Image (tube, rainbow, N blue to C red; front, side, top):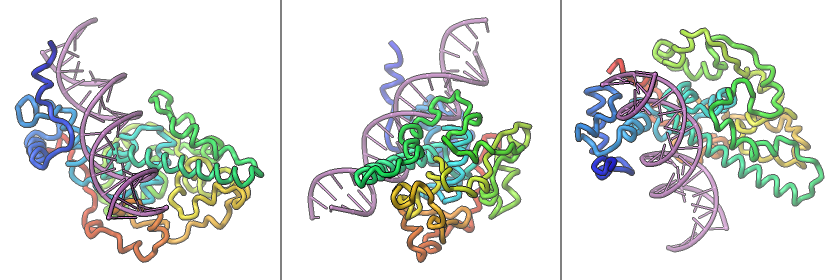
Length: 312
DNA sequence: AAGCGCATCAACCGCGGTATA
DNA sequence: CTATACCGCGGTTGATGCGCT
């Protein structure tokens, strides 16, 4: 009855180069819209949905494909996730060149890693001797973090996701540009001209008088001892000695203290692009590779904004 | 060298919102 | 006003690659 014909020729799975080409041609002609017309015209045997996804995630210009999240980007994601919840598209809009899929993947992989680390730490410290009561922080990410406002309704801004993050509760109301300094740095560093003008999320914030609360990172960073919540944990997950945090015997109940000084190289140049897999920890260890790993094009590709439908 | 486990990425699915007829 | 189609988003899953044992 329904769409036997419609369904029989729908192609799924990995995209071929020819398909990409067809899709690109369509976008060149008509802009990134009318996705379903691509199939109805017989150009591709893909659903409009699939075409759109391919464009958004892979073919759109200026995507940072294959680049690891920089530390700044990671922090931005962590901050914004705490602020907005799992609004990946929204979060991605603050990260030029990143898609919601990127952010989503990044986050879930990070969550898995965190869960794993926590689990490992919990079991090892338990087996050593459950001498010190492991702080609640330990329990939080495994039980709670994966569920972070999975439903969209819980206006996340009103409920700081991190338990016991007192600094979040102290967040100030920042009007209009809800970005902490490091994010601004990310945005403005290479080209101050085009950023706010062309980067739509800023635009929309500028236009609206919306006020959102945003935890100030300076505050977040000032007192890591005892009040480390998910955000800080997540932010530090890539540090070589991150695991120390969870060893209550070593860290004496999260008196993490100065041994967690981040050390070089914590910050990477804006827009840096860590290529390869699982190099995050290695990057922190191997200072020799810090600058060596920059891709050749990062300094001459100042992230132009994605072509907007109206421009094409 | 092979097998295993983990991390990452790409793509699909379902659902809700919006536009249009 | 209603029905339908389309679009966008978030969650999930399968494939692949890589490192470790």
